[in-house]
Image (cartoon, rainbow, N blue to C red; front, top):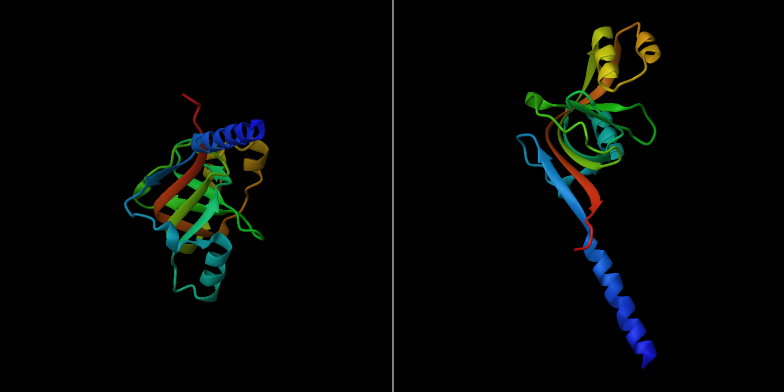
Length: 162
């Protein structure tokens, strides 16, 4: 009988602790993002490289950087490549306090862009990079970018017991 009560108590504790963990979602931008249609970042890159004319995608990736000045861009990183900057169409913003490693779903357009020296330095200043890193920028750079018209940020959080 004692074993029965211990098992019931353990089960009750396990189930109540599961209720305390919630996934919070926040949408930004004018376009709703359908996460069920999302590719991984690596899949999106392969598809874009295979056919650059097909440039509209929905993909998911953890955030590795967030603009600390205004939230006007985020960085994501494929498994075997350079950072990809995601900028926001019509200048909607993601809060600068958005946590690194939060999973985000993006909808928008992939494209190559030439970044001027000034813009590269501006992005590093937004990221609060050290001046020594900013001073190393001496030439324009061509990089893959993504212009999102919708972002859905998913963040795991715990709520205290009541």
